[in-house]
Length: 267
Length: 201
Image 1 (cartoon, chains in turn yellow, blue):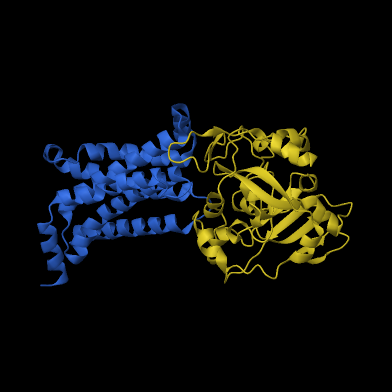
Image 2 (tube, rainbow over the protein chains, first blue to last red):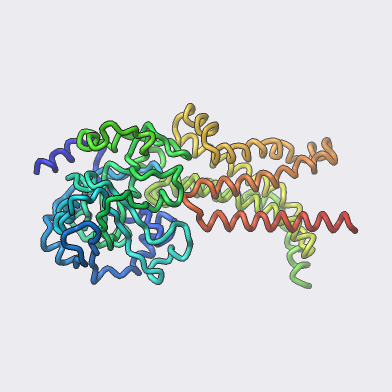
C-alpha cells in the first residue's frame, strides 16, 4: 500500500491514464512488424494458452512455471505508471500486475546472482515480423538484480483490469517504469538468473545508441534525437511537448540504485 | 492502337493542372485526418511521415519519366515539372510539420540539423531542392540553356539523400526504406546505362 502511494505521488496533474484504445493501438512489438499498428493487427496469431515461464540459472528451484500456477501465488495490484518510449513519446498506463521480486523469490535467487535475463516468446509462424532480421530474434532483455528486485519493477498481466492484450505483451510482461520502454520486455517465456551482464537486443543491434541501463534521462540524448522532452500520446496534432523527467519522474525511488555511477557512460 | 499509344494519347489530352490538383489534394486531406483522429493516436509523427514519404514517391515518379520514354516509348515529360514541384511542396510541408508541430522550438530545430546526421542529410536534400524549384519555369529553362539540365541533375543527389534519410531515421534495418533505396538505385542505374549507350552510339 505504501508503495502504491509512492508511485502515485509522482503523478502530475497531466498524468491522466491514456485510453484503452490509445494503449492497445499504438505499440512497438517488432515480432509483429515495425509499424505502430502492426501489433494490434497481427498479434492475434500468437498462442498464449498454455503458457509457462522457464526460470533457470542461479535459482534454488529452476523449472517451467505454468502461468496459472504463478497467478495463483501472486498478488495482483494496480500500478498507474508513466511509460516513456526511447522514441520520445509517452503514455500513462494503469497496469495490473505483481512485483517481479515476488516471482524471483518464488524460484529462490541464489546468493551469487547479479543479473536477470529475460526472453520473449518466439514462433516464426505466428510472428510475421520475425521473417525479417530487424533484430536478432528472440528478443532478450536484462536488469541488474537490485533493479529487478526494486518494488517498482512489476510483471504486468493486465491493463484497466482486463487481461493484457497480445499486442501489449500477453500473458505477462515486464514493466520497469524508470527505463525506456524497450527494457520492458513483452510476452516473457524465460527468466535466467546469472552473474554476468546479459546481452540485450537493442544493445546488440546498435551498442552506440542503446546501453544496457537505458534509464530515462533527459540529459543524455539518444544520438539521433533529443531526450529532453516527450509527446504524451493522445494530445492530438497541436499538443505541446512536455519536459522529460530524470528516471521518468521516479528519481526519488530509484536514483539510489545508481549512486556513484556516471550515467553518461552507463547510459 | 497499342498500350503505349493509348497512354501517350491520354497523356496528350490531360492538362498538367490536373496533375497539380490531384497531387496537391492529399496535403489538406492528410492534415484534416491528423487533426480529427484519422491518423491514429500520434498524428504528428504520422503526418510528418506521410508528407515525407509522398515527397519521396513523387521524386521517384519523376525519375521514372526518362526510363519510361527511353525503354517503352511512353512520353510523360510534360508532367515532370509538376511532379518535381509537388515533391518540393511535400518536402517543405514535411519540414514544417517536423519543426513546428514535432520539435516545437527553433533552437532545437537548429541543434538537430547541426548535430544529427540523418537530419543534416534530410536538410541538405531540401536545400538542394530550392534552386531546382526556383528554376522550374520556362523563363529559367530558356535563360540557363544547357546549364539548366546540368543543374537539374541535382535531383539524383536529392533522391539518394532522401532515401538515406529515410533508412537512417528508422530503428534497426527496416524493410520499407530499403525497398525505396533499391528502387531508386535501379532507376538511376537504368539512366546511367541509357546515357552510356547514347554516348557509345
